[in-house]
Image 1 (cartoon, rainbow, N blue to C red):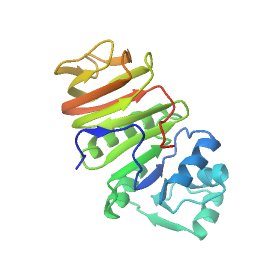
Image 2: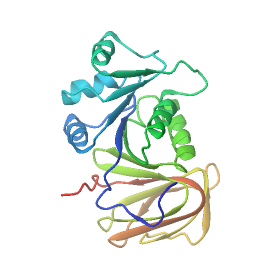
Image 3: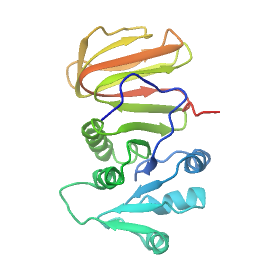
Length: 225
């Protein structure tokens, strides 16, 4: 269950980092993330990319094996590979299920979007469903985001920072600290979107009453010092 009224700055430490086979952040950020987490989970195809970027293999790779290259096999020779041949769910959902079975309650994720647009949309749909069970923070160079299904979060931002609120597919929420505030209002995919809002205070809060959203914050991830 997602904890209510969470402060997101600095970013709370996660139980694991989940590396997805999308657009990964810079080697510098990947190395920094890998050094801050106790467990690194990679989906099919992402383990070798994480190894090349950081010089370290992930703790475990999870998937159906359809994206495993020769390089991936070398990575997995000394690490755990959890093979899940079920074709009813994608590798991201398989990795989330494995993580939940380990008792993880909070995750940092990289590689969720980018590369193939269909995968990006699908991944956000999967995360909307899983956000009811685990805290999900997406990290990249120059931005970070959260998939939130209920509860309240608050975070520090510079005045003028872009904050986009994207419904998955519908959300009822209230906000404070933004130029265009929402007061128990609905956003809905294909009906009303919330892209390119702007922080007018140094703290923004989001209170989700129902549904789910992806909140995109265009500032560097606020790691603890």
